[in-house]
Amino acid sequence: MAKVKGVIVVDTERCKGCEVCIPVCPVNVIAMSPKVNGKGYNYMEQIAEACTGCSNCAVVCPDGVITVYRSK
Image (cartoon, rainbow, N blue to C red; front, top):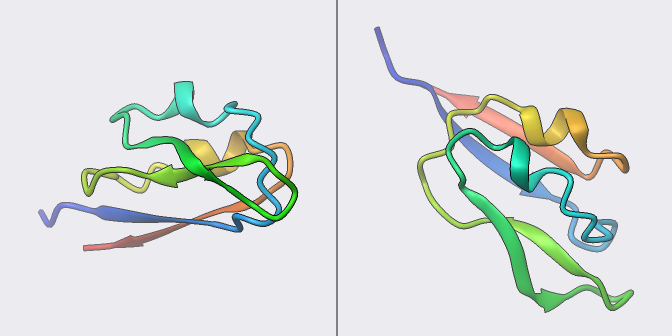
């Protein structure tokens, strides 16, 4: 069985840095960026390649700024 990999894409200009997504990641591949968006908020970014594509982060995001893509 092929292993599923995920890629997280964040709309960085709409992310308000609430950090709700970080504790729900089972493989700890997301963190707050030291950079800020146009509104002055730090935003979430994928920091490792180990994403499993579970989409937990996208489901809990209150602003719907996270999209997860899966591939085998």
